[in-house]
Length: 309
Image 1 (cartoon, one colour):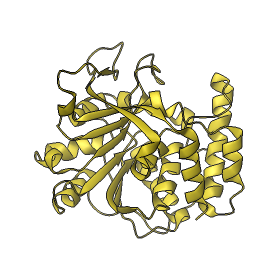
Image 2 (cartoon, one colour):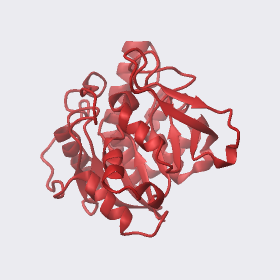
Image 3 (cartoon, one colour):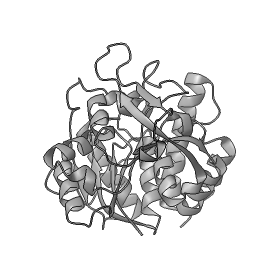
Image 4 (spheres, helix red, strand yellow):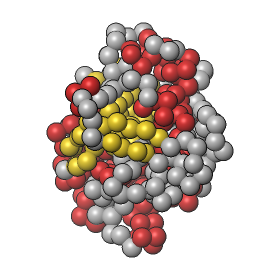
């Protein structure tokens, strides 16, 4: 069983990733931590609690975290996630709220209370909380298990600017802190998440499931698919964040390459660009792996099976 802290900014695709994580017995969810990103920090924390309640997993604590990036001005993605962050999903006041204390401190406390390498982190929003935790505890990176991040782009180009993916663009300085920390990172960028799309047949398979999490996921997928159709003319939206959880559950569904990864933090033109270099003098020494391929059918089979539980 993987001991997991899930750091996120729900967010439509974060919500589906949360449903997948909540439904997977291979994952021992130690905490959900939230940050500003797709929408404001107050909304991402509330949204995580809503998703938790729909999933019936109030046993998992939620810690709210950063309400702004480390240095840059805040950006949000409400145009792609709706004003609430959860598209047209029917909202309610969660019966259980968030825990006391900042998410960054919760990350430090949980990781340092476990043996080295025992706690995995999934990051599906800006890396702000993890970067703050690393600043609070300088030995944290060496203590962590794998850090699986959704962010960045190489071959595909950006989705918020010409060369930057949203999560990295939203806090490039935090991403650079994490990638330069020495922690072992697996990075799911647009190069791979654009391969995993909720086409009509895959969406219909989830819509046929009579379970609360599947019903909510269907609302979110149909919302994303409508945006994809209207904005870029596509027939299926990419489901970025669930790829992180799918990798933790079934790594064989993904192809990775060792790399060096640097984030642009100063250029007004290419802020948030991820410079991915595969030409390494000693690939075995690399601490970062970049996802290049995915078995999309396998990912959706996994997601559909778990949502049916």
